[in-house]
Amino acid sequence: MTDIYSPSDETIEQAKITAYPTPHKTDGPELSKEEKIETIAGHFKAIMETLGLDINDSSLARTPYRVAKMYVNEIFSGLDATTFPKISFIKDEFQHDAHSNIVFLKVNFNSFCEHHFVPMNGVAYIAYLPNGKLIGLSKIPRLVRFFSKRPQVQERLTAQIADSLVTLLGTENVAVSLSAQHFCVIARGVENENSRAITNVLRGGFDSDVDLRREFFEAINRKFMGESF
Image 1 (cartoon, one colour):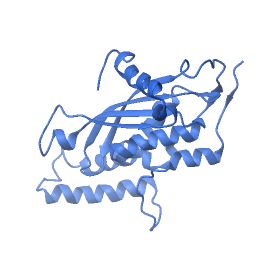
Image 2 (cartoon, rainbow, N blue to C red):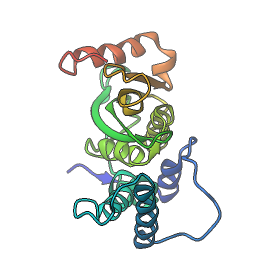
Image 3 (cartoon, rainbow, N blue to C red):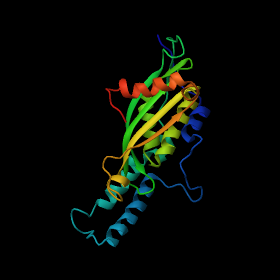
Image 4 (cartoon, one colour):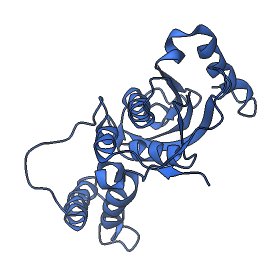
């Protein structure tokens, strides 16, 4: 029977924050979810009225509440540290040579640009070399979701995912590549529908070993249904 175990509480706390924390205010009381929803709904109602919308129209009347609830419970839920996923490992019993047991994952994600508060959607390509343990495959998508469900910049999101995995896995041998479309480019400004931004964070052997780095990027193009960036 395969033993399943979890990281220490200290490791989890560091993995939540990473070396690239999302900017948080440090003053003022911590609001409950209900208080946040009520406050945001009031402010969003004022925004709608300022834009000249009829807040009494049946189609718009509950929009402030819907938006506030969506912000708190869904698209910005990653701001709540208690939503960090439960992490578990199993012992890696399949270790061979350095390159034979690379773990690759492809994870779709949805986030929000913190500059304009509009979506950025894309794909995260993740690889790591196990250091005696394997993380549950469902845990990495949940980890990506945790860091993406908040106002973000793509560079920080990439670094947070990589840094959290380094902490949890106990190895520097982690690679993360994000390819995303930003609606602040698609829906405003230059309105370029075909643009994508690519960000990479390569740690350990993925940074120093040319062959390992090449294998990671070739896997992105070959193993994942031939899809490129």
